[in-house]
Amino acid sequence: MAAAMTSFQTHGFKACTIEDIADRAGVFKGSFYNHFKSKEALAVTAVEMYVAEGLKTLPLEGPPSPLNRIKAHFQTLIAIQTDHIRNGCLLANFSAEVSDQHANLRFALENGVNEWCKALAEVIRQGQAAGEIDRRHKADPLARFVINAWEGATVRMKVTQSQQPLDDFFAIAFEGLLAAEPG
Image (cartoon, rainbow, N blue to C red; front, side):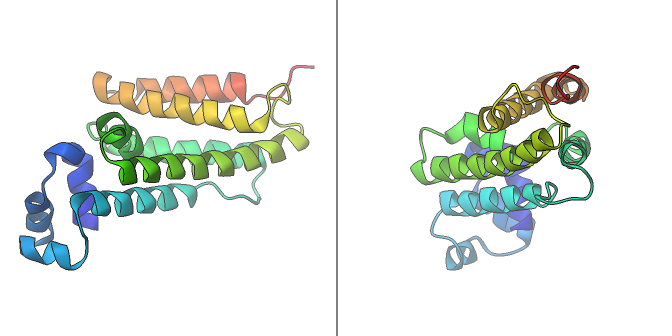
């Protein structure tokens, strides 16, 4: 799986071959099929692992406060993305590359992003109840918007080869959208 994650991050879904993954893992190509039915099945597992790892950085309970948990979550993601600017976010990359061609992978991507949105919305609701996050927006669409903005920033990061889109995302999200309601 580590070899697959690296290969998918480096080459994307279409350009990555089973042979690339097997070579990186130091195994014979034929042994791949002992574990996975297809490259798409492997990609589905990669997406599930990627989402699970990302969700570990967004605790549903504190301390710290809900807003600080959300900030820490995105700061962790920024640190990860900054270390791999050329690669971008696996969810954004796969979504742009294969979502309408591979139904199982598209479903895994949709499910993974939905899980992320659900977790973020829960912490946003907690922050709104505590008066830390603006209550003018419902938590669910706000969470979806924030994640959509994040995914867009990771795509732009790849284009610009800089952290600036992630920094812009963070500033607008936390100084504007998620800031406590004025007054």
